[in-house]
Structures are given as structure tokens and as C-alpha cells.
Amino acid sequence: MRQIDMASEEFLHELEKTKKFTDKVCHQFGWEYHPNHDVNEGVTLGLARHKMLYGKRFCPCYMVEDDPQHPGKYKSADNRICPCPQAINDEVQNEGKCHCGIFCSPEYVKANS
Image (cartoon, rainbow, N blue to C red; front, side, top):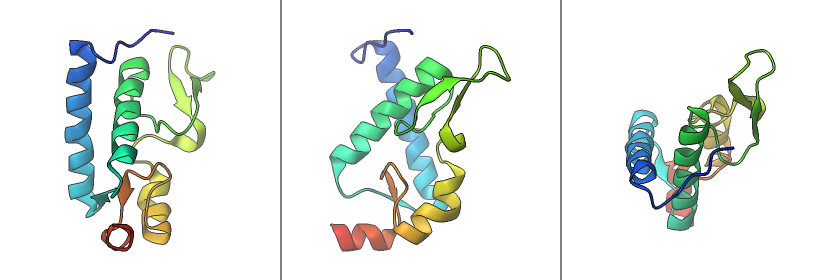
């Protein structure tokens, strides 16, 4: 597996693109970031790392593995590509946050700030 230097210009550029991506997701769905900055930072770092390693922003909370049906491609458990269908259709509206915790409903943020 490729090693990622998190201080490299390449990673920092991808991290900035990932931050813009998560901002766009929050705006698109009316979500807010988790009130704990450390949660947001960890998930954003993981999303950027997965984008560099696998070409997609796979959820950093789930394993990514080779896709046997598509050599040279990858997949994650339950199709967890950010923002995942589970977050959009279930987790945020029913639990207040997605599995990773980065995306939250405004009500969850208010209750947990």
C-alpha cells in the first residue's frame, strides 16, 4: 500500500479539497459539523487519505478492500462512500449524526454543544 506523508503538499492540497467537499455536503443537506472539532478533523483527514489511496472518499470508519468483481478497484462495507446513503436516508435524521459523526442535524448540534 502507498504511504501517505500527511505533511506533504499533495496531501495538504487533497485535505483542502476535502474540506470544501464536506462544506458542500453540509450546505446541500442542511447539516452541520459535529460540535467536537476533533471528530471533524479526524474524519476529514481519513476522507482525504482514502481519496489519495483509493480514488474515492470512502468512509474512514469502514474497511476498504479490493473489489473482486472489478480488478484494480476498491469497495467498502455497505457502500460507504461519503456522503453515504445510510447517512442521507437514515442516520442523520434518526440518530442526529452520521456513523462517523462529522455530519449532524442542527438539532443534534444544539443539544450537544
